[in-house]
Length: 86
Image (cartoon, helix red, strand yellow):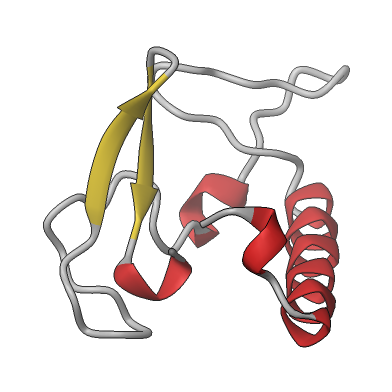
C-alpha cells in the first residue's frame, strides 16, 4: 500500500505499532534466525524470534484475520504478511 493513501489515523497506528515492536525487540535482545544469527556484544542470542507473529509462518492462519499468511520475495529476502497488513 502506498504511503500517500494513509490517513492521519493510519499514521498514528503505524507509529504506535513501530514503537511497540522496537521496544519488545530490544527487551528480548533482538532476533536470531536460522539463516541470520544474531548475538549481542556479550555473545547471547536474541530471543525476540520466539515472539514473531507472522515471519516464517507461510500458509498458517493469521491470528488477526484468520486468512492464510502469504510471502513474497522482495530484494532477495522473503517478506511475510497477511491481508490485514496490506
